[in-house]
Length: 228
Image (tube, rainbow, N blue to C red):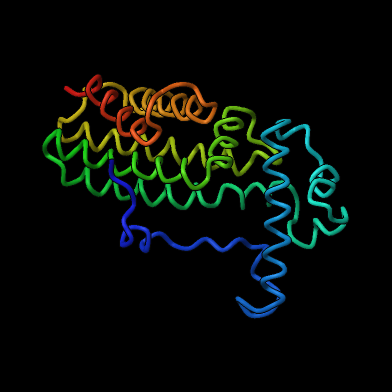
């Protein structure tokens, strides 16, 4: 299984949430305290969103769970959509970088082995996300098919990014004769849908064997079915 190397990780731009850009110099006492309080709010919100669903959670619920005054919420976030944007930031940054890299590799790929290696890069990032951000991944999978309004807007934006990249990657692979000439959108969404279902099964602790082997195995199985 390929995972992000130190060099690959360094190529991913650091995402610094807007709520943490002030006050005081980065790393100072005030900045650190603010970062800790913002983290407490995000963790409380994530737990509630996973338990109840986004629509059933209010700012008051979040701040009670975080043991902070309700009014303090707006010192850190403009609204729940802003909070959700920060929850999705690690997924957005890593997936975008991995899918961009996959597209670049497919431009040079002329064999099925090179194609599989490009897709395995994405599988490696998915494995890393499952290990490092399981709650955020589960929240994305839980909410990505619901209407992308209000608090869910950042989730919908991430879903559109994944779909756009998947269709682009499929078109590049087809251009080199590595995949069947199906409608790229249909082929891409088949891969995305199957992958998301398997990731959700992992997070719900369904018995699928070694967690680390699932993303690359999914990529291999799907590509075997879609290849020319």
